[in-house]
Structures are given as structure tokens and as C-alpha cells.
Length: 80
Image 1 (cartoon, rainbow, N blue to C red):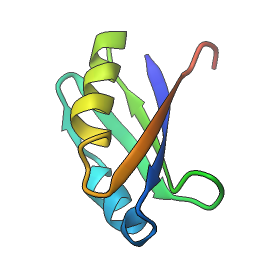
Image 2 (cartoon, rainbow, N blue to C red):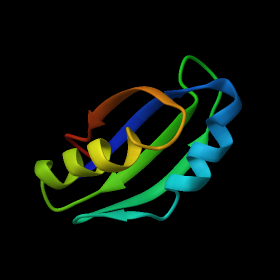
Image 3 (cartoon, rainbow, N blue to C red):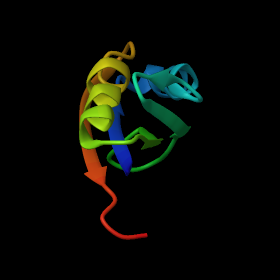
């Protein structure tokens, strides 16, 4: 299962958040990429895991806990 996580951060922390998440494994989920971006969100994360529960754990324990994160939106991939 694959998901994209859109993250809003404190503007001064976007690069730090992307770097802190890049390549991390959380539970059964792997963060494939984490990049600082422009637009209404500051960081775009791609993650893969064996189940919805693994993705949720990745978002809850990894993405949402990175210092400076204000808000996350998780988009599950339904077709690729």
C-alpha cells in the first residue's frame, strides 16, 4: 500500500522536517521520499507499507511528530 502525506510546517522548519523523515522506517512502513515543496503544503512525503494500519502508524508516529509540523493530510493511492 502506498500513500502521500502533505505536511504543513512552521515555515522555518520545512527543510528540517523533510530531512528528518527521509528514508525513515516506522513500524512496517518505509518513507520512500520526503521533499520540501512550494504551495499550500510545505513537505510532500511518499510512504509504503503492507497495510492501512502501517501507513497510519507512519503518519501518526513519524510525520505528525516531526518538529514543526502543524497539520497533515494523508492521500492513499488507490490505483497506480
